[in-house]
Amino acid sequence: MIDHDRLFKELLSTFFVEFLDLFLPQIVSQIDRSSIQFLPQEVFTDVTSGERKEIDILAQVYYRNQDTCFLIHVENQSYTESVFAKRMFKYFARLYEKYDLAIYPVVIFSFDEPKRPETQIHTVTFPDLKVLEFQFTAIQLNRLSWRDFLQQHNPVAAALMAKMNIPVNERPQVKAECLRLLATLKLDPARMQLILGFVDTYLQLSAAEETIFKAAIDTMNLDEKEEVMEIVTSWEQRGMQAERQATIIEVLKLRFGDIDAALEQIIPKLAQLPREDYLSLLWRLSREQLLARFQSE
Image 1 (tube, rainbow, N blue to C red):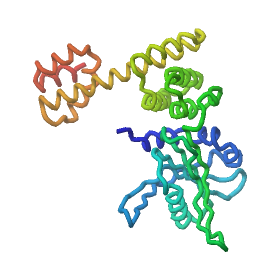
Image 2 (image 1 turned 120 degrees about the vertical axis):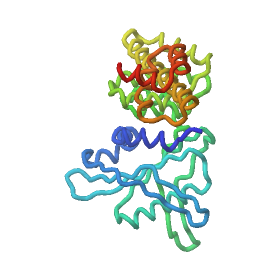
Image 3 (image 1 turned 180 degrees about the vertical axis):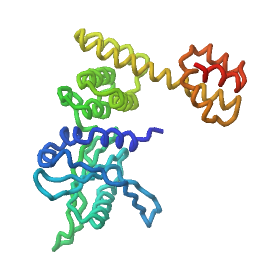
Image 4 (image 1 turned 90 degrees about the vertical axis):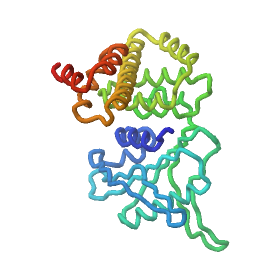
């Protein structure tokens, strides 16, 4: 199961200003970017259903050159829900009651289907009276064309293109373009890996698609091709390293039960060896022999 909320929280909290630049330029133009402060996670309990929900992102921001602040609430919705607009209003009401600040609500609809426009308003009306008209900004990714974001020099665009409206036959090309855009951003390794992980999660390619993906990279100019291939190679190596460490952990547990701190420290060293070598050592050597061999290196 993909933890959609976690992936989107990591992406948007890491690149919050870039997210605002991309989708809410009218808001980001009014705020002091250095004033952004993420508030503690809020957990709400629905007394009727008993469900607990932790809201995704809540940030306090100040207007430029003012002492006035407001809140930006961003929620990712990974499945369609008929009463979602009503639920967003409940979040708004509880946050408004607690903080007594103006709140700008934003929802990212990140599901693949359906592609009809999602409701972004909740109303309470009578024939003679409109009691409530609550609205939020909706960003419905499956109704956005990935091609419209190709020239955006923005890490959030590089990631979210993977969740936009993509015809099946264009999936390899989109992944190639996500990495091409990522290569131009010159991010630090940790942030680059975050976006790579996001794109790789939502654009997992078949063997046939991988062939088309590599062909798309070959059509890039030499500089772009080299940078993208460097990213791909680094990502593949990290994946192999993670896979090796997972295998080593499984074997260690089979042989010795719980893994203590001493064994944890030698796992990265074991993972640097070829598969045949580390498997042979794990089965041949005792715990004490393993520690003596690798702790001394």
